[in-house]
Image (tube, rainbow, N blue to C red; front, side, top):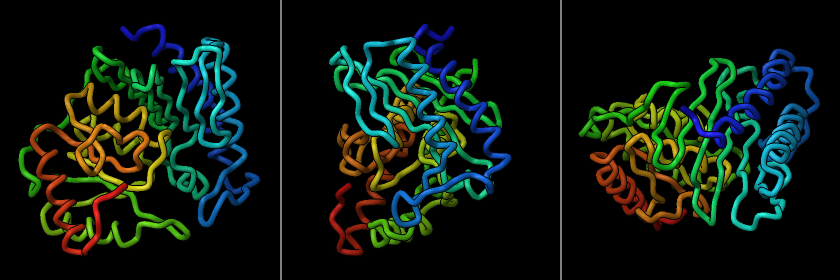
Length: 271
């Protein structure tokens, strides 16, 4: 059974999701402002973040926050904070593409110890807690058991207008096209990681990410028996900007493929 912490996270996510589902049906009428080139933030996004902060603070009033829209907020408890993305897949949402999620992670003394990723349109709640395992609703999850990159389907992200990283993306995808069964880009890093944990994808890599993009997903992948590191194989994927996540057998070959692709393009393997 989920712990009290997971129950708090689930309740907050489900409550925020009701507003997102309503707003998704009226996406074309939302007030949208530009947060950066080709990077939009909607009123739905802000409302969801405000509600999540209210609900999580009500349940754990001493915890701090790190949130995509409003940034960091210190709490009375110096060791614990929520890391929240209220709407991962904002561009999908605003274009009526039904693939987005709410992501909530709990950090304790610098370690991510619990995560919830909720996809409201399919009512799929992915959750994990250190030492407890990873679950989809109440069903235990495991990463895929594939051994060869040639049989694997991987996911990644594509940098869009105004974002750096085009050369890195092209180099790594070029290598993946030659060595794998396929590459997917669905526009939500948190769901990409949840799908790795569920065995739907065999692996995922991306550069230029923020903590709220990956914090919850890292717990899911590891508790589902997978590996998650940064591009250099280090345990710095939450704050380092890059992530490579897959199962035990594919992790080293995937890292090797990415490094070889970057070397062929004369690009240093940084985040």
